[in-house]
Every structure is written in C-alpha cells, then in structure tokens.
Length: 571
Image 1 (cartoon, rainbow, N blue to C red):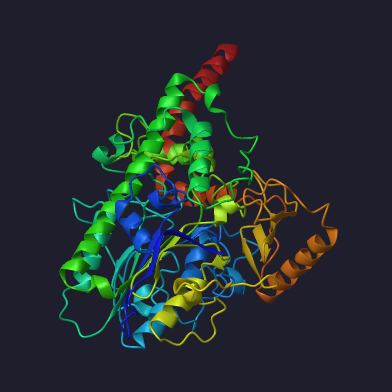
Image 2 (cartoon, rainbow, N blue to C red):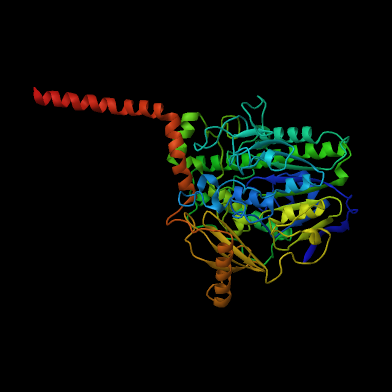
C-alpha cells in the first residue's frame, strides 16, 4: 500500500522533542508542487519530499477557513465553529454554533497543546479564524504572531482585495497593524518575521512555527522576474495543460495509469474559442500564478537555510500542505467587483499583471486544469477541491516514500501532538505516525468513515468509496457515488449499480451531519453570490459619494432634457 519513490531509507529517530514547521500554501492544487509532477519550479519543497513522505490520498475541505479550523484543532470544522466562511455564510445560519465564523470558545489549538509541553509557538500569515481579542492566535496558544485575519489580501500593499472588507486585517501579537513596510511582499515578509521569531540556536526549548502563506490565493501577484520564467509555458491552453498534469501524476505513481482523467465541466470555456488577445491574457495569468508559487518556495528555502545555519534543521519536522484545491473564481466577471476594482484602482492589464497595483486571477478553466487528474476545484467537494498535497519530512520520517492511505487535514494536529508528546485528547483526527515510520497500515480502515461539508458542498468517505454532492453554479445538488481507488477522477457514478452501498453512505452522511450540527443550505444558495451580496452594503457605505456623483452626471442631462421638453409644451 505504500510505494517507494526513491531508495527507501528512514532517518534517525527524532530527538525527544523535535522542532515542527507547518507550512500551508493557499489554494495549491494536488499537482502544483514539482514533487507531484508540476512544471512549476519548487526545489525546496521537492527536496523535502525526497527527504520524507508524500501523500497521494490526503484531503482538506473545499474552503479555506473550515480547513484551517480543522488544522488548528484536530476536530471537524463545524465543531470548531467554522462550518462555512464568515463571508459566505447565509443569514439563516448566522449565530448557529457550527457557523459562528470564530473558533469555538474553550477549544484548544495545537499551539496551546504544544505550549503546555514547553514549546515556543510562532505564527505568521493567514489565520482567518477570528479577529476578536479572544480568537486571535495570540490568545489561542501562540507566543509571537504576525497574521492576517481575512480570506486574503494584497501581496504588495496594505489593502484589501474584496469590497467586503474595510481594510486588510493584519495583526502583530494581537494588535492591529496600521502600515506595512514599503518593500512588503507577502511571502518574503512572512518568512522574515518567522526567522526573527525563531531566532538563534541559543533557546533551550523546541519551537512550533506555522506559516500560512498568501500564495497562491487571489489576487495572484508575483515579482516580474518570476512571472516571466513562465511567459511561454501556458500558451497552448488549459486542455493541453490538464492532460500534461494527468500524465505527470500517472508517471509519479499518484494515480493508477488506467484511471480516467477527471472531467472538464461543460460550462467552462474551450481554449480554442478564445480570441488571440484572450489567450495571451490567460496565459500570462497562469504565468503569474506559477511565478507566485515559485517565489513562495524560494522564500521557504530561506527559512530552511536559516535553520541549517543555526543547527536546528536536522531536528526539525517539516509539514507542507494546502487548505483546498485551486481557486476557480473570476472576480473580473462580476459587476460589484468590477465597480470596486475601478474605484480603488486595481488593474487587470496584461503588461503589469502580477505587479504592484494589479489584480490577477486564473479563472475556472485553469483551476480545472491545475486540479488534474481530478474533477472541479476549490468551492466544490469533488477531489479537485478537496484532495491536496501533503509532504512530511524530518527525523524519524520514512524517506522517499509515497503513502496512499486515506487521510484528512484534522489528522495533522493529531500527528503533531504525537510528535511532541503532547495531549491530543478530544481530537477526532488520527495520527499519521504509523505511515510516517514506514508501516503499511491504514489510517482509516475499510469501514471507517468521515464527512466534509462547507457552503452546501458535501462529501462522505468510507474506505475506498465516496459520495459527493455540490450546489450551484456548477453543481446540481445530486448525490453521486464513486470508487476512488479505481476512479479518483470521479467519472463513473456507481449510485445506480450499487444501490445498497449508496443508501448506506447517504445514511452515514446524515448521521455525521446531525452529530456535527450541519445545516442544510437555503434554496438556491450560491456562496459567491452571497459574498457579493454581503459586499454591496460595505461598498455603498464607503463609496456612496462616488456613486452619487456618477448618478448626478447621468441624471442631470436627463432632467435638463425633460425640463426643456416640458417648457416647450407650455409655450
């Protein structure tokens, strides 16, 4: 069950309490890292993969905050109070225990558990689990922090990326940050702060360092020199790209050679239907996306080099993963987003894409291609939205190994607790330690099960089988059944041919949902539509005067025309 990619060799057993570095890349697809077959250069992450174990059947939820809640607590996101993004939670769910949008009171984080064992605990980057004094990471077990509590933000400046927000919510050790440095770039800055926190080898306690990179979340932004390395890489379009990723995944042993490639949704555009100008724009958008990920890897390499310099590298466990599949939203196609981007001066011009003042995104077609060999992407519970990379490396971890055991993001804190000999009581996640030490043993047996749900996207796993149901715009709220062992692309629906299994798994999901406080979504619910509805009032509150002026410019000539027409009639 565990295949070896390289000459198998286990590292020496870890010291009594190893350092632990947890890296979460944002919206990174299953095959985005070089170690998973990508064309994107990620040499530092790939080196960790060669030194450790990579997972081929690891899952998050299809949305960021629920995944991060599970990552920090080891329990289901609904039990943690974050069953949906706060920004996309419908009014009908607000206030329900599973949908508060803040970490549940009294629920210990993995940082709290490690600090009780004498660990130094640090965090930089995206938190998105609450910005009240009692829910910031500085109040939930972290000694030093520099964090963002939003879904994302600009990577070059201190400003928000959505009209929903008044400002980019950065906090340093629990205090709001008024300004960021003039030379700020998110991946660079977050690593600098973590290096400052970790310090030198003089400390007498191990550390837990958590970096939540903004890469490669919207807005997709990267230094120009990184972008231009991929200037010609994506000119043949997303269909060709998804086929290359599929072939690379098969060659790497990540999926069976005879498993069908995941579907390309019929509502998505065909590359050949685009104009030459549109093709050039989208090719550049993907080049920025690739450059942003390579830049993140470069800066992660600086942290690794620092740990080597201070003599802490050999006693450090590295965990690298993503919070969900690739981002498929295209903000430029929305009226509210277009108006806001015009008001604040964001540009989508091809010549400056990725640079300061630009707003880049790859859209659903590239997201579907990046999620290859799986179906769909972020915001959907198909494998393209939930199956993500996981790499674990360090002392005691089997080197050059690929693990195909089913696993879940709440298993990471359970594993960290085991590594640190910390209390894991109350966690529902399971330790991955047997796999990491080279045992050919399942984490979840053939009759074990777990569910995933957020924003009406739901899945239930039992052994090799999965049922899945998605809402609009690309879903139809119909349950389907798949055998992931032979069909990870979810192309052969078994619901009609396996009715008893299908019914059992639906019953299993219903029980799981009731136990975890999952609520049904309102009729016609669409998370992006809800986000834009929630953004309308903040937009009007901040820019009413602009809209009033624009309205005056439009209405005044009409009023003059009507007045003159009336006066002519009177005369």
